Image (cartoon, rainbow, N blue to C red; front, side, top):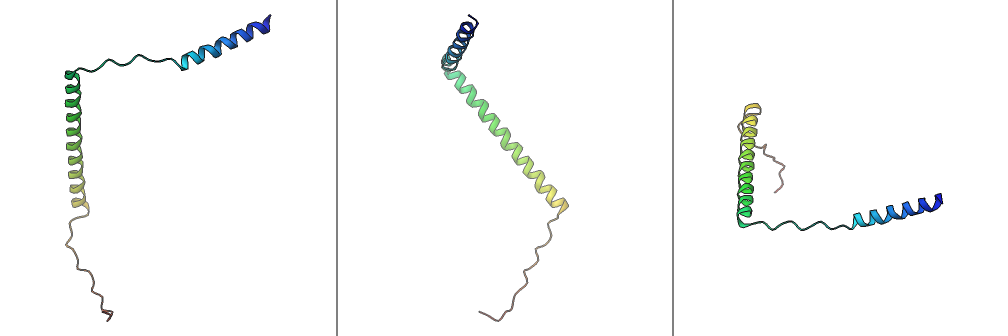
Length: 85
């Protein structure tokens, strides 16, 4: 009797998990043209903001380089006179 209950519960668990794994979610509703346009505008604004932030970061990096490293005059490379042509 006890063994039969355990087997029945195990079978129910297996069937329940199988049904849960193969469940299908309903399809998302289609977006209207207004929603698509709003999403595109939002994406364009985010891209423009990221581009501005990148430019600002690059400007700060250049200013930091110039301040700390300095734009030293370029030294001419030493000429080698090995005699070979």
